[in-house]
Length: 91
Image (cartoon, rainbow, N blue to C red; front, side, top):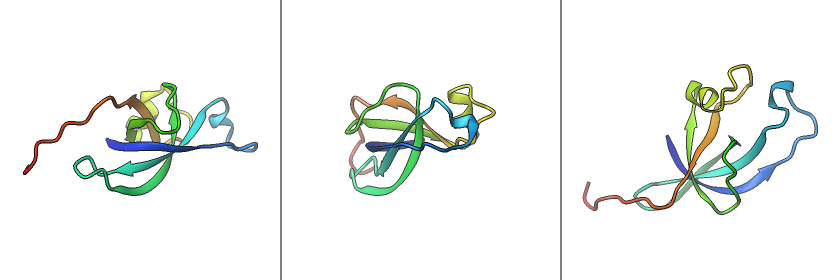
């Protein structure tokens, strides 16, 4: 899973039929220990995340299972809004 921050929305007037009705968000990956910003990706959002939220993203086949969307071309899904991350120093 990936820890990230929602930084934007994606609107697509033309897209694969399996993506109809899905909310697409741009998520910037964060290093869980340092909060360093890494690469970004587009993820489907079924839980109502908004811009600025720290989120938990699952990828691969788990992303399709998370939203019961096995027939859609999805490889990243937001599965949680993070309240807090606690990392022990020196680990």
